[in-house]
Length: 124
Image (cartoon, rainbow, N blue to C red):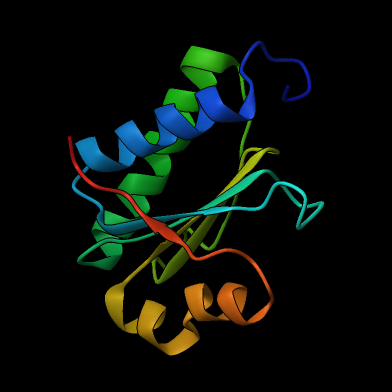
């Protein structure tokens, strides 16, 4: 469980995916890091269409996690809005503008690092 919260990593992941879907994030991918990295249990990567949307997605996600689970997320990159990282402790979320995501190719880095294939998130 996350320190000081009643939310385990699976509950956090489910809430994060719902928030991203609600805010129209695109190309949502999750990577299972359990047993592969000490930085967290899951990584979620998604895109927003503009810097404004990237920032809004990150702000709404952090607010939802604070309100529902008492999680105070660490946020980096919000000022520029090109790539925002939200660290909940158990789940790390990267929200990119599409061009920045293409440049860094974070999914490919995790594939070549021996992690299992990223799982695209399908809408229900």
